[in-house]
Image 1: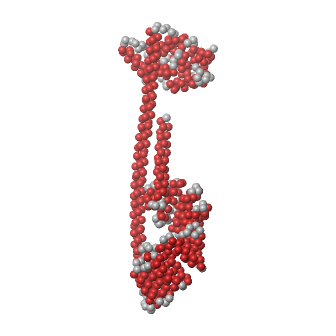
Image 2 (image 1 turned 90 degrees about the horizontal axis):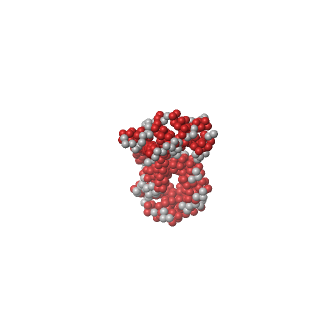
Image 3 (image 1 turned 60 degrees about the vertical axis):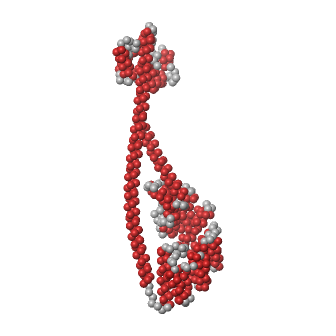
Length: 552
């Protein structure tokens, strides 16, 4: 019984800890999913609090890596270490979770792009696009077409890019799609898409993109069609569309190239000098030097070409110095990044040690709590057992005292009923035949002591009772009951069962038999049930009546 309780307690504690940990994990993932679009930084903080993510299973594992990849994507950070987003994709495909599956296709494509595996990235986008078409999700179709078209642009597959952006127009009225089509298609349709992209951008109030489109169209007209006049007019019009482009160095750089092509080096020098003194800016308004490295080199090349036209000495040392400064800066930044990575690894190692120590402390505390719980449980069970034991002892004392009173009452009433003779003989053998009503206090104390000793099983009644002397009394008082019982059922019943039958014949109750034989009531009931089965009696039938009726 004790071991069974311990095993059950261990199982309950194990399942509780398992459930609580699992619920806590799912709560974290649900919270991260709810805020991913607005706060990817917080999502990464939540995910970092999940220990040993590589040990996650099934849905939790899929959700974790999808959310982590998506947060990196939204922050424009690398996904090169998010390879398990492929696991997320496969899980959602198997479980037909359309929304998360389509998200994972895009993330998997982005992961492959970071790995410089363009073919794999294209396969992911193409397959995701097919799934979006089957799901009739026009918003997703548009997203996949945009991602796929942009991938074509990165790989310089301009015709494929223009074609897919043209198809995308059926699903979204996005001016960027018209811009790409107008930039890379040929013929009259190119002009239509070009004009439409600027028109749509202006209708939406996107003046900066509209000016940017027009500037790139100007470059295209200059390089492809050699239409210098149209290119110059388009460049100048960008300043009308957006104040940002009124004094824009790259525009002046393009004008310098055009005037060089027209054989006008002085005008080219004017616009080149103008581009050098203007504030450096990238196409969309940023001031990131990395975006302007090409611009710096082009300016130096243009200066060399202008000097050639003017028959001056060509000095390319400025290009070498500028490029050397870039290389030095990159080397310095790489050294800093290496040191930062080393420090990050050291910090992660310290955090891991702290986490392990924390887990060990928590496990020790759980173990202590478990031991205390088990100890308390065992003490409580011991208390219940002792309590039941005391109750049984009190009941036995009460039964024995009742037997003594019944015997005393029969003596006081001069009741010479022979049936009481057996009870007196049995009480005499137990050493408690003395009368309660005696005047000798010492005898009363001895009597009470004997009753208590019998009830506590300090004294064994099996040793006190001499059944070879009691059986003749049973035969004498109860018409050879013991003799007939042995004759009829002596081979079926054992000694204890024969004794029980004799006590029942003497009209002892189950509680009285329990006190005399020093056995629990449950044991007495079980023994009576066993006797009934052996003699072929139904459960509710009286044993003594049955025996008397079947004695021959």
